[in-house]
Length: 150
Length: 197
Image (cartoon, rainbow over the protein chains, first blue to last red):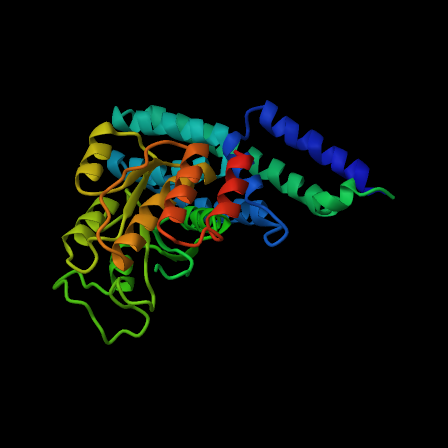
């Protein structure tokens, strides 16, 4: 069955996401919540994340265009963004969020801007990788069928 | 004899992702779930209005905790929310004569000891760090069982379950069997969860 090669490719992609630190244990928690009744749960949550967090990224971007910086506001947005990122196991993005918040707390505008650029890069990379991952996942089909003998 | 109905949890979180997550976690643990995105909506659902604390009996979907209609057995709420925080919500519930017996659990992404003790002092049963895991929800059932026993039998003395995982599910079964409550709903799911953990 051609599902096996897809399944293998999926495992390789998945392992790489963890090994390279894009995802952490929380992603596994999401996977454990997926079952026959909710077969696309992980993809649904991740899709929701990218949709919802795009709004926050835009808010932060706009806030960074207004000088002087409102660090409280920036920190507030990033707190929300960090929370969502943490909920889906987005490890690298979460790390950048933490750094950003530290710069907010110390009133370091330069640090905020630098970190935000880095955060956007990580976010874009993660998005691409996860989109590719779910594309393969959909083609690979549900777990059970992949394990069934011909 | 306690009613055999499922436990109903009201989950409060302003984050749409976290609402989806907590809903799935709770349903996986065999709870009935209602999610709302704010403290004020939570109070509305519970039949309480912010300003006067009077129960609105005209609203068909809500009723006081001791009716069998829409009974809420536990409120789980995020701490950081715009407007009414989880702490504010906790206070309002505990200050309400009709709602104060509903167990409240707080969730937070930030591990702030003073925040945690403030919530526990105000009457929160648990303080869970986000992201919340399936295993964390094992801590919820004892609090809901306590309330069921209180509602339907003579007053039960407080018995805080602080152990985690395996021992706790066994305690639930033992306690439930002693009180004559059906263990059907309790046993299979908890075993499933602890096995996964």
